[in-house]
Image (cartoon, rainbow, N blue to C red; front, side):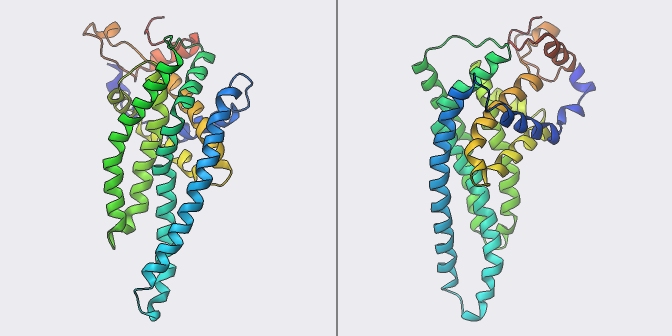
Length: 283
């Protein structure tokens, strides 16, 4: 099969992931998307500002409390602890609180993703707004069930002396995966694809996925820019899924049921040429 022949290509390319975030920003001003972009930006601006202020206050107070228990001649530890703590907290905000923001804004993000797909010629199953809101919120709860135990493990690691020196790197690696997973999943959910399928598919192009998630997480730490990251990420992730992970019915090639295959390069080329992104697998 072509998967085996092209297994090296399946790892992806982080630069490709970066490029889709840029494309998302470039489309924020499109007239047909503006009504769907406005609400995520407003929600993001309010919550990010509040959480950022609260986090800085908490961090400063916590460092001062810790230093209050050490002798004055060890005050120099502040200059070691503070950079590590700041980096860790920034990553926690970028990843963990980003997950909370996405849950709150999920109905609006789902609508935006659907609109992007429709603009690209994809067919989305008809659904009422109340049904869509219920579906997207339940989907976010499923994702939280996947993420929270893993985030808890990272938080515990972040609190263990010496071991916590590795915490920023672990947050960056796992957090980049989670951020990409959240945003790419909107397009899968548009077609009622199971969440397990999303994880499996993204695992076929880990470098592209991690590149996308890393740049989104980095932008979430930049004041003012982070207000616009969420809708740009939704747009970019939807385009990435359509162009790099098109839905292809496996039985067309193998005749063995209706499982899916996403790494068929010839089919991707055909769909991009024809402008077809439907999940029927047909030409």
